[in-house]
Image 1 (cartoon, rainbow, N blue to C red):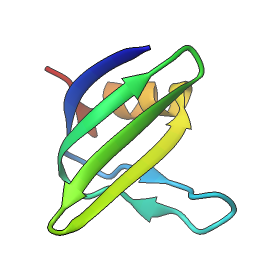
Image 2 (image 1 turned 135 degrees about the vertical axis):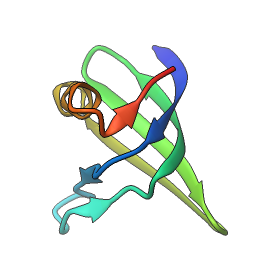
Image 3 (image 1 turned 120 degrees about the horizontal axis):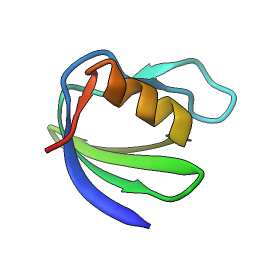
Image 4 (image 1 turned 90 degrees about the vertical axis):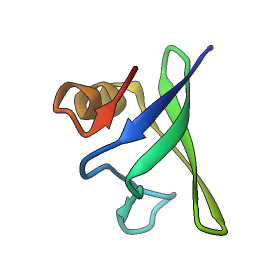
Amino acid sequence: MTQQTGYIVGKVEFRPGDGALMRIPQGPVDIETNRLEATLSWVDGETHGAAAMPLTDFKRYVTKGAIALP
């Protein structure tokens, strides 16, 4: 498992369970990746959020510049 900090700088969405797509707010995120998925966690005001997504989706967001890594 790899841990790092990144920044949401564009439109990044995830689907919680079977629900509708939700947007991750712009700003810093903590990222944990393994060989299958990436888990992003963030703080937005008093709200803490977390989202897991397939690693292929995470890499696509990084490639298109919606998630910036140091």
